[in-house]
Length: 211
Image (cartoon, rainbow, N blue to C red; front, side, top):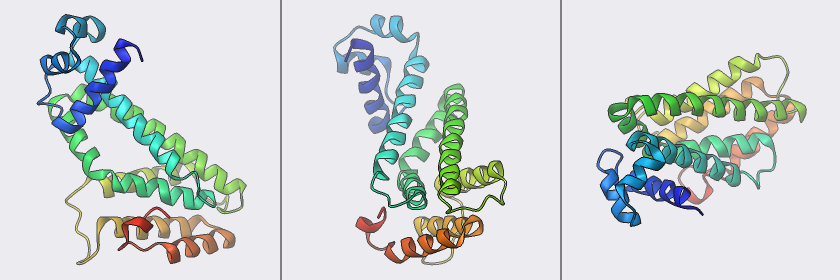
């Protein structure tokens, strides 16, 4: 790993654990044993480094989600797993995005645009795979389905003012909403797989949340 990559990696960890606003270029330079001048020469300013560090963080989460569903029995289960990972990561991501929006709005806007584009592309690929495998019907608008899934995930994971029924966790609500959405576009084969997944899914047991 070269110097620039090492700095981005270390800065990412510091921003995530210590807070975006509180980490200064001085802190990063001291932690890595490099001069501030080196940081400014490589990244221009804190925003330049922050963008690359957060870009790496969100890409690492995307890789983790992909790895989490490697053992999925089918694309429907993989989609449940991926969206479940999004729900599980919501607290950390909400904090980071909130700080970015408040203190570095330009970085926030750029990351949100790029993240939304990538997420929509990932969802499109999975939905198209489901259609090809006979799990989803072709009688729905793909772009609309992608939009509904994307904004449903965003609403559940990014909004903390949602009013849920007493005793229902955000993750339970998320699974119920997503499973009902999938039922609406599934074939008979897909419906069987949804029922099978939900039978094995036990919200009260963390170790089963991504099965």
